[in-house]
Length: 196
Image (cartoon, rainbow, N blue to C red):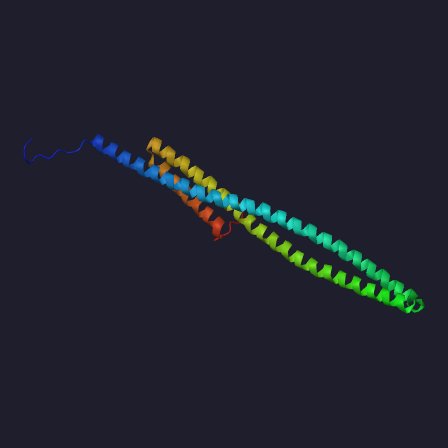
């Protein structure tokens, strides 16, 4: 070989180097897809747990509400009975009996009002828990679809490594982008899809 001759690389070696570079980049990007999948899965699991927990807590509050409501009704019935008794026998009662019945009526009235107030607080808490459940219920499908698309992206990226087919890799990128967008939407609710 003379001083001025330049050795050109073998076209097969260039293609092999290009293929290795594509394989390395695709493998690295696939690992990033897996990280996105883990984060979206975590969000989805959290949303599912929050839906169940909020529903359970709301049901407990409504059961507590029912209990308070039943007690309130019992006191109301007792109040009406005492009022009726005082109307019927009021003048015929001894002053001590009248005083006793008035004291009972006052106590029953206060208890009825107390249960009515407690019911309002319990109702507000139950509705707040239902609202929280509904917020997580709206978020959950975005996580689910995001997970599916990220899983599809990982499979497609793996196929592109095996086949060296760039169109498959670009499809994987599109699936991952859409999956990530849906997963992020599960966290932040940037948009709402009409079919979810």
